Length: 215
Image (cartoon, rainbow, N blue to C red; front, side, top):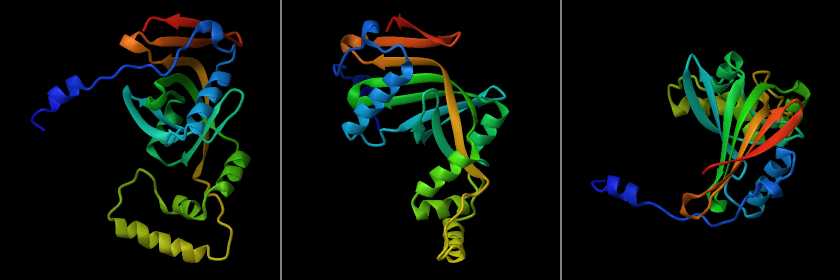
C-alpha cells in the first residue's frame, strides 16, 4: 500500500493487437460492432458482452456495467428492473453513453445513445430464455432499494420458489428491456507508443459519416 502511487505510475504496456484504418471499415458501424463482439466471443473473453452504461440526471452522471443481450440493425438491447436507479434515470433523461472495453484485444467502443423501452413481447420472449433461478430472482429483487439483510432476500426467494413450484414463471411487469439507439460511435484500436487508431461514425440524414481522430 505504501508504494501504490509508484506502482500505478509504473503500470504500463504497449498495445500491439492490431490496426484500424478508415479505408478498411464498413459503411455501417453496426457491422464493425458485431464483428468486434464476435471476435471477443470467439476468443472466449470473459463477459465479452459487458458494457458500461452511463446516465445523467440533474447534472449528476452515474455508470454501471450491464450486458448486451441482442443487437439489431440499429439498436442494442439490454434488460433490467424498471424500478432500478438506472431505469429511473433513463425515464427522466433518455440519453446515455456506452463504453465497451476488451483489453485482451486492445479495443474499445464508445457510443452516444438514445433510449426507449422495448416492446413487451420482446421482453416476454427474452425472459423465457433466462434460467429459472434468474426468473425467480427478478421477482425477489426490489432493485436499488435498501435491503435490511441478505437473509431477508433469501427468505423471499424460498417463498417465491414455493409459489411458482410446478408453474411457468411469468415476467414481472416491473422487469423488461431497453433499446439503445446509437447516434455516434467511436472505435478505438490500441497501438504502440500510445499512437492509437480512432475512427468515429456520426449519423447525418440517415447516413453514417466516418472520420479519423488524433490519438
